[in-house]
Length: 499
Image (tube, rainbow, N blue to C red; front, side, top):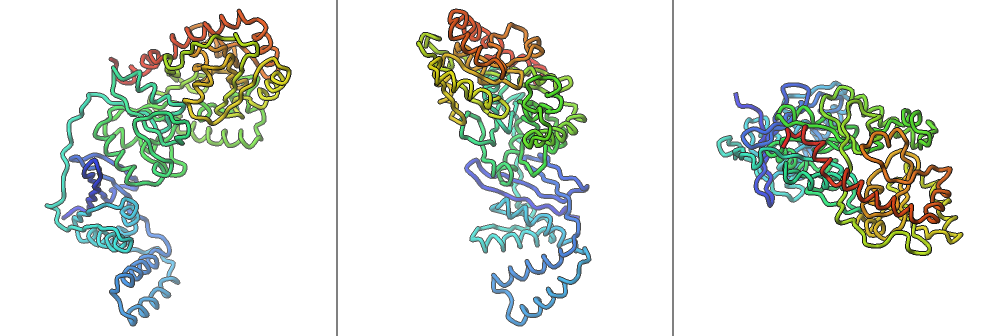
């Protein structure tokens, strides 16, 4: 008996991509690569009240649009529709189940050719072609299994290949990829806003990531054919996301394909607000009833429930996050040290420039930073430069030109901006709790400041410039030791199988 498959062919600049849609033998969906084609197993749609009405209405509209029914038949079928509308029994034929299961998928994919391998799927294909014609799209339907193209799986070009995504937070995935280049070929995927202009190997809009089936299946087919390791960023799935989905939706497919996978967390997605306010005196999550804190807590609780049963490696990018992940591994932030190097002397201007550029004002304590630095500016002690949401190249130039960079006052750790400021040889200020300083393997040259003493710290740095310059010099050396990419490679190598 012929298997009820639909083989969809999409032509693009990269050639023909073949996707096989097949009813799942279980209630779970899955994907696998077979003979070079991506096979998508889709659970049959369970009958629901009103399904027969929807099917008959859809068929009537198509027949009317194509001029296949006369006035008399239209009236008869409309009368039948009125009767069906009153029939709320969930009842579907097998052919109707196939149509409701696969019809919408085909409309989203918009293939160029459909090869139907049995009469039931042929009916689904013909209906899809009818809808395509109404949209002025060409869709060829073939009912000859022998004509269906079958791609042969090409040998992998590399023994190992890593895919990191889908966030590329602060350009970190790209920078890790550059650091790994000589060891393991690595590609990065970014599906977030491009306003900061961080480079990535593969990019997509949020709309593509959430709803473009063609893009999702193309990426899936490529990854199953070429990738050996996957790092999920921020607990998000790699190959498209429906509301509420996490990385766990991709795990069964990767496991079946023998692709190793792990997680990397950047910050607020894994930083438990309740635990943070217990551990860190100046936590921004002090009020559990605050709307921002409640939303973060709810998302964090959901993620942690999934994380509890996950047995892959888990990496965190800042040392404080080790407090929130059992058996986590520190994957140090990486910055382009050479590109950030600045030849502008520090604190030689009579009125030094102090920069504050938060990625999140609520988390970085900007409500405390702004009034203090604005007052110092008004008194002529400093020139306060406040920016937010600018392109990364513009921000890097501002960092290189500043004398002092204020990172954050509430989280108790340090992030990308602090690393970039230290790499540029700037005096770096922030709140790094003693428990976090104890986790790093070198003395951290960040001037300690909290919401209560920021003003005094800045005035002391401005008045004691020689001591401040020594702190800045130590920052550049610190970043070259821990954040130029070499430590990140060392952290990832065990996951990737060594050198």
